[in-house]
Length: 260
Image (cartoon, rainbow, N blue to C red; front, side):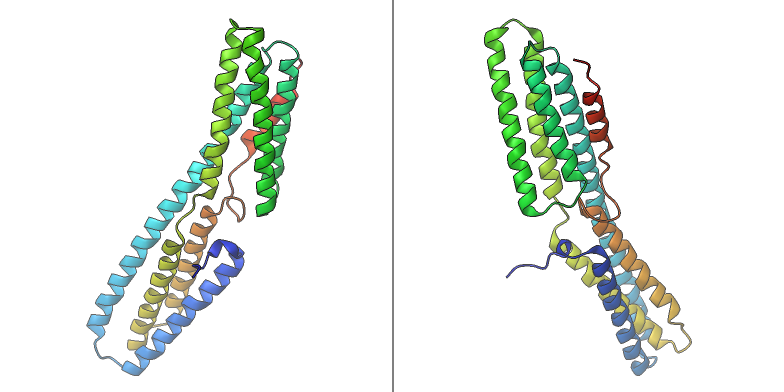
């Protein structure tokens, strides 16, 4: 049995459904509280405080996980842009025609990254882009293999091969960072705790005849909004919060300005 993956659904749809469920749980709990009257009010207040504390702990824990993964993706994008830029700079010092051929390949490699960042790629498009990236890397490596025979004592050759190797490593680091998300079970557990906490809050409000519904509904909306923020941070390519691709854009502009 496959576990529900919330990343398969639009953020707005997840937000509306989760808000509806949490509000319904609150209303259901309130009606139960009204029926129960004032019996066991102290115990319910204790349980309400405990479950709200647990929910706050879960939100903080999940938010920290999502934020750490977002920062990893941001650092991976910056590191890859730096690695491509360094490789291109060192390629300029190679003997002809390897310098111009390597820079042309690096421009294609970088353009492939930018094209992917400007749209939401499907699985097949992503796999095709990875295959194309690997092909360009192989072509660059074949160019590098011919250099020691032509210029065995040339220091730039060794520096170029070192930066090329780092560039290839950074692709895998970035792909790994993009695939690494908050475990589905953690997000589902967070929604479960939030729903139960909202139901307990509604139940406590129902025990007190004068207690307004508005604070309960406001809390439910805030809980849904915070969980939406966590999910947004956890999505690498879609949503309102995305990793800036400006380092790649700046690198592309720098390489395009090469005079030779």
